[in-house]
Each structure stands twice: as C-alpha cells, then as structure tokens.
Image (cartoon, rainbow, N blue to C red; front, side, top):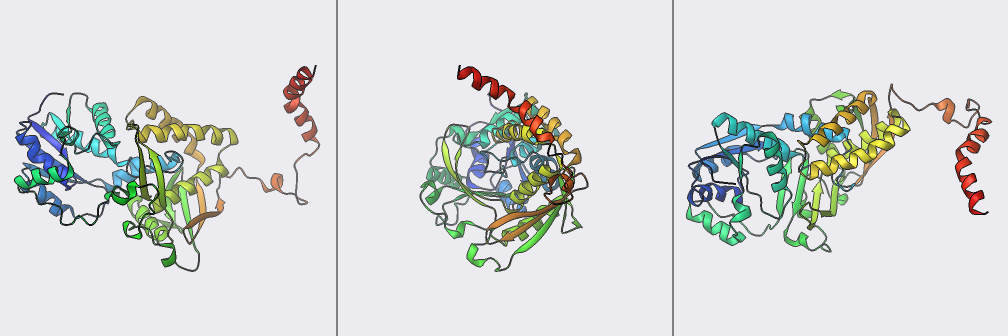
Length: 400
C-alpha cells in the first residue's frame, strides 16, 4: 500500500473518522488531510461537522451536496433493476458508497492528493465498496484505512481522540450504529446484536409505530416514465423532492421497516434493521408496472438479472464490467415501462391495488370470461398436445 503525503478522507463527523485525522498525521506521517463530507440527505447539519474536521487537524474540510446525483444516478437505476439484496434489502446504504468513492477520487484529482482514506473497520461491507470503487475509478490512488489497522477498542479510540482535542461522544446510552441518507436508515449494534431481541421503538425515525398510524387507508398514485418515478398523485416532482415526499407519506403509515439476518460479503452474518419507506414502495410499484408492460419472457429473465445486479451493488462492484453490461440490458427493458401504479397504505402495509399504462400488454378481450371473450378455446387442445409431447414420450419409454 505504501504511505501518502496528501490524503482525502471520507468524513462523517463520527469518532472513527475524526480520530483518523490525527492518526494519519501522527502515526502514518501524512502531511495533509483534506476531509470530504457528502450531503446525501442524512439530515445532519454539515456546518458543525466541517468545523469539527478543521479542529481535529484537517487542512481543508469539503462539503459536497450530492443529493440529486445520488437519487438520479444511483437510486433510480436500482429501482429500475428492482434491486433487493437477498430479496429483502433495497440497498439504501450500499448505493451511497460508490458515489462517495467517486467524490473522493474527484477531490483527490482536484487537490493533487496521492491517496484517499476512510474510517471503515475490517468487519464490514463498506471497506470493500470504498476500496474496489476507488480502484476502479483510479487504480493509481493509494487507499488508507486506519481503523482497519489500528486495533483500538471503542474506548481506546475515544481516548486517542481526546489526546488531540476530539471530544468524546456526549452519551453512551444510545449504543446503536446508524447510517442515514435520503433513501433510508440502517441501524445495528447494541442490543440488536441478539437476534431474538425485538427492536425498541426508539430506534425508528422515518416510520411510525402501527399504533400511531392513521385509522383510515391512504391511496397514493406513483407515475413512472421509462421506469423512472416522476409523479406522486399526478404532481410532477424533482427526484429529491419525490423521494422526500414519499418517505413522509409512506412512513406516516408505518410501512418500510425491515428486520433481517444479512449475509455480509466478509462471511459474517449480521442482524440489520432498515427503514426504507419510500424506496421500498417505489420498487414494489415499479415491479408491478413491469408485470403490465413487459412480455413474460423478459419479465422472468430479468428476475435473475436483478438478483445478480443486487449482489454486485452490495458487494462493491458498481463500477465493474458486468454491472455495466447488466445496466445496458436493464435500460433496454425500461423503454415501455411507463404508467401509473396505485398503492393503498394502511397500518404498516403497502398494497398495490391498481395499475395502468399506455403500453399495457393486458387485453381484457383475451382475459375476460364474459361475452366479450375472443380467445380461441378450441386452439388449446392442439397446443396442449404439442406442449406435452416430450412428457408423453418420456412417460411411454419409462413405462416400457
């Protein structure tokens, strides 16, 4: 790996990334540390975070508003792919990592840095996503990961930071590790490490408890153009506004909580809690619209592609040749995925109750059992004979 002289550090304002600043300079001889905090809609005030980085010894503290790019270039393609890792997790946190890596690489080029750094430990998935994405974008850059090597316990990390004026966390009563962006929140650690422990209500922020949700259903109509969500209840909204509004509407009805045992890339099973109200509804609505507008063979073949896509994103291979090839396939399938889906929200559920499209392949004349039926029933007998012929021949041979 080698050491570096000027480093761009992915900065969140937390203990680990703050301690990385003096550690890189004192222990690894880095001359200059530039921090970069990406605003992906996490809701934090980035001004104080910027100030904290400078106090910890950063020569410059960058804040980049990347919310629109995050939704347009990362979230929307994932929705078109109906991306659900292990058929459950819609990759809300995973999708942020290749974008942050891209911002780090761009900042390194702008400021003449010879390395990027992050505060990931050796047990998680994010280290893989940052490292592999960085390598794909600029294989010449060094990648430094102090928290993967320093061997500190949590207490030792805090103690090291205090030596350089980094304040300890205010309270230890909230033991959870939380990552948030516009797409949702991931919550882990503390009592949640026991898979039998029910998540306490205090950990949730974007979704209401069922007992606090409205007692009457709410209907929301989501409009798509070529697989991209563009309207809510016929109102055209910009990408960030659309996701924000949907989070609010859907979260108000308590939908979007996921509690799962997840298989990390590094081989560890981890208990993860996710809050993803808007994103989960968008994927469900999009998936349903595809069933109306795509032919059976495309729909069925795409399901396998979607699983591969989800694994690639989860495993840090956003910038890979296979991902690029799959992207081309998915974009081709989306040409006719335009229409509106009606969703009924009620007491923690989101149920698709209607869909329409100018490109609909549904024919009421063929589907109906009424007088309008124009399906040729007599053709079925010949079809079944030909379709079942291989099975008939096999059966005759097996029975001698």
